[in-house]
Image 1 (cartoon, rainbow, N blue to C red):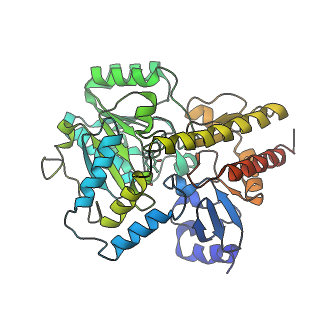
Image 2 (image 1 turned 90 degrees about the vertical axis):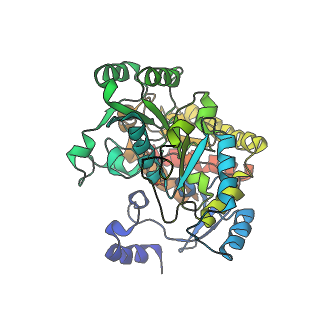
Image 3 (image 1 turned 180 degrees about the vertical axis):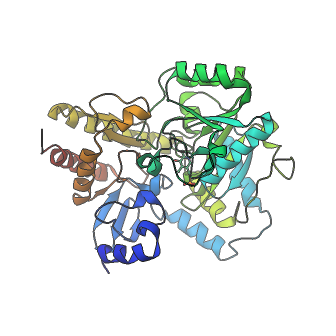
Length: 423
Ligand SMILES: *Cc1c(COP(=O)(O)O)cnc(C)c1O
């Protein structure tokens, strides 16, 4: 069956025809037949160079041979034990060795679980209820954080079905705004358990912290006894070997991980200072649990992935990112498109916005219709990026310089199409 027929059938079984909202786009999403390396192939036999990469996890590309081999071997000796394994320690050592703020780790099953649990332990540690997040930041799909959320939630008003009593404890301020944060903390500081933030906002496009902003956030949270949580579900093992905290040189109290840590299988983790982490059950009073937490399949995929990510790997990936970003910038410059290419390391995006983007309000002012024309034109040229201005695009090990050169050409054409009308 073709994608269009499958989508029509799918709508009978799944709300909106999909199992996660960002996957639905008009007129219908392509249905995947298979993927390998940087290529994803749909049931209509189109092949795309993939920069969505499952929204971030696949830093080695699809079906990396070492991951496939080692995960298959693990699968043959059991997929869940309900008892600990040595491999969990091995993966924890990889995490602690890389992430500067990590002393102890708890594995969970998704980024959502990781942020939910990290916030709970921060509340347990401080005895306070309120939390701060930045507008447009996405920290998963649980009740605490679905206030002015990014990613798929950026397209909706705040989610229905969440008690006001829950979200009254979630305060939000604009990203990169020292004044707003100072004001909030002056008013509410002693009630605030934690500030959770994406170091680079990766769910409203890609927004870097202004120089000095992270240092400011670190200082003001420390002075007010507020636990600082870096949500590195995207940037962990992506911005650099030690994530965005290593990239910018600012260390939080807790870090949440997901996406890459599971090597392409479902997984999340949170880690941080021993003093806080030891409050988690069974060593402490903060409950956190999961049937599949630390399951041997995801753990093996995590080990098989992280052990391939050394300094040379990141240098190579950054070179590809720099090449792609500088070529995009040249096209935009030459054609005088007046839009904003952004990104760091192996992350990139274009804001269809004449002004630079520093926060959620700026990002929302971008021309989403024009972005969608660009997205569709790229698909036609054989390049798949997430179908939203409010996501980030990713590069993997599997993208060759030739793939990237072809992508530059596709982007040049897609921008021309996007700007054809009313240029
Ligand atoms: C994807 C993401 C999450 C949620 O992770 P899931 O595995 O989808 O639950 C949380 N925080 C950030 C920054 C993310 O990008």
